[in-house]
Each structure stands twice: as C-alpha cells, then as structure tokens.
Length: 119
Image 1 (tube, rainbow, N blue to C red):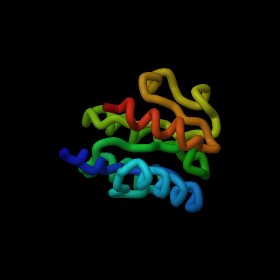
Image 2: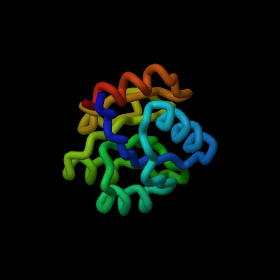
Image 3: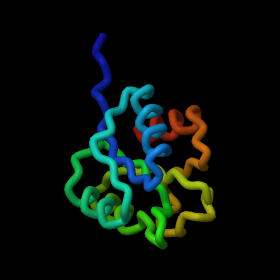
C-alpha cells in the first residue's frame, strides 16, 4: 500500500495563535506547512516563489491589508487556495468566488473537506 505524498501548504494569517491552530489542523490532515506569511507583502512575495500544493489565505491581514494580491499571484501560477475568514463568502471579492471559503472559527471537519476537495 503506497502512502499519499505530503501536501505542502502556504498559510497566510496575521494572528499567531490562529496560524498555530491552522498548522496543527493541517498536520492532522497529513499536510506540511512550508511557509507562513503574516503581512500582505510577505504573502505576495511567498506566493511568487513558493513551491506548495495549495494555500490557506486569511482575507484581512490587519492595518487595512488583504491577501488579494497573493491570491491573484497564486491564481496566475495555478496554485489552488482556500479562503479562511471571519467574514464568510461576503468577504471574498467576486473575482475569487471559485475558491472555497471556510469561516472562522475554523471547523476542523470543514477544513478537512475543503482540503480533500482540492484534489
């Protein structure tokens, strides 16, 4: 029986405790967090250079910053992503509506379903 390869993930989250929770939840799903960004500029830089299977993006990164630029870059690179936000689907612009949305607080079962559905 062959094992599934470990899926590498970029996490974009400005709250350290939430980022740690996400890392724990992803580890339980057999994923490895390859990179963590907490600002819009870090997220955009990592989105340009990352070698990951998918990303989890918080919409609002504090101080008026968003992860929309990172999402655009990931889309151009054909790297799938999942929104993780306290604003639900209403917080995601229409141009990103194809990406799944998980509301905060994060339900581990919904996260597992979204990760599994990425393929």
